[in-house]
Length: 74
Image (cartoon, rainbow, N blue to C red):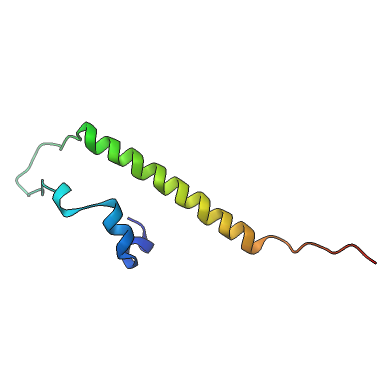
């Protein structure tokens, strides 16, 4: 989870739901949990979405901090 997701509740609701978290771990659980194919698929999609969001953020930063264009002398 990113820090921006903590303050923006819309992002948290898009990435996870309470009904998907149906296996809370207990201290007595000794076995490693296994991911299902559905969970792997969702993780891949979330990774793609985060990569796209990062690229968009980088484009915004590049446009904000690019050097000013120099006007040709008259």
